[in-house]
Amino acid sequence: NERTDLFLGTFLKELSTIPFLCPERAPVELVRLHAQHQEMNGTLPLIRFNGSQVNPKFKQTDVMQLLWTSCPILPEKATPASIKEQEGNSLSAQEQLDLVLTMLNV
Image 1 (tube, rainbow, N blue to C red):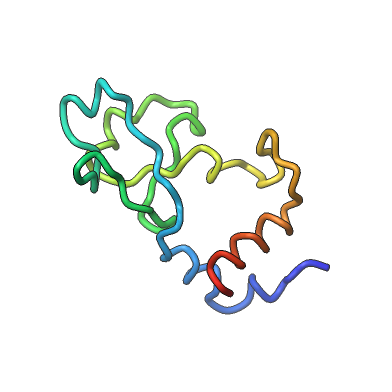
Image 2: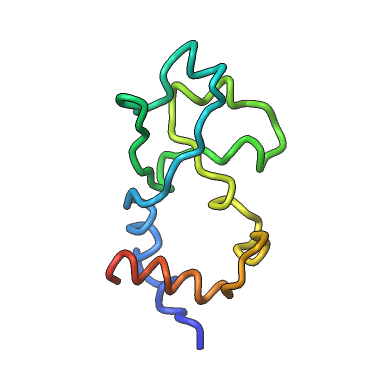
């Protein structure tokens, strides 16, 4: 029983503006040159989908050197082609969505 109501209206747009994801960490050798975007005292804040960039590993390109100081980077598990493709995941796509909605009190 899938919740198709989530695709109507502005729900997904509103969800994309809520910071609830841990960002991808830049490699240590880059952080030695300059702090990562939004880093404060070695801590990165939660990020949102809106305004974040796709993880360079997912795109199979090496652009981390261009992004780490200028924008949040989505973690690899937040950018699969299909949510079902995540390795080691025993939850269905609907169960994962329900878990996120529960955490957001929706």
